[in-house]
Image 1 (cartoon, rainbow, N blue to C red):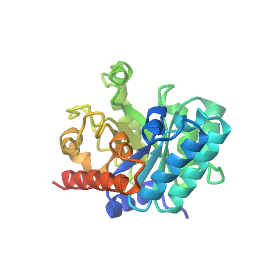
Image 2 (spheres, rainbow, N blue to C red):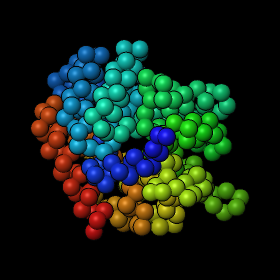
Image 3 (cartoon, helix red, strand yellow):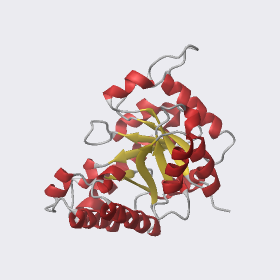
Length: 278
């Protein structure tokens, strides 16, 4: 039987540290690397990141949109990037933020969570804002395939509060409701559940939210967005051991030199490990 995503992620975090490196090949970053904003540049960029880091970081998070903008050839590069990263021992969280209802949600799930799909990833980011129940096809397929989900709960963008901190009739915010759903999904899982939340590291005091969902917390915002490793215990409290901090520009900005990429990732990983252990 395939080990669950939560089990594999816990093992990778314990062995390699919890750092997640984003793979976000936007046009300005390609340019700063001296690459053209085309498929060849995309391929060179992605291969360089994977070859430099896949044997040391726990998780990669490719942003699907930056590949999809090049059409089928860009998606082909994404397929190869996922395959190469996983072959080198890194887990892949596909950042696609899919969310829909019924058969459409099922098709999104099959694209990224079915083991026979060329885009099969260890986990997928999803949006629950058509109702948490709309994610059922993805939850079911993730369980069957040993994959995981990261559900948008408390995102770092300022606009997110308009929805995520809205208060329901029962007095609970929407964000808190999503966290409660995830805690139910992860009930009884050991060493950690496979259904995580996206919670921004830049949000400050989150003590009013129960982040102890027995699942991973994907935390964007470290580095260029202003949060630091030292902020993690204050933001995440007792749930900090399950935090997967994501760094993108803070690492990628040191390319295309592979040694510089590795040095930057090592620095962030060390700072995060020390902050979490403190």
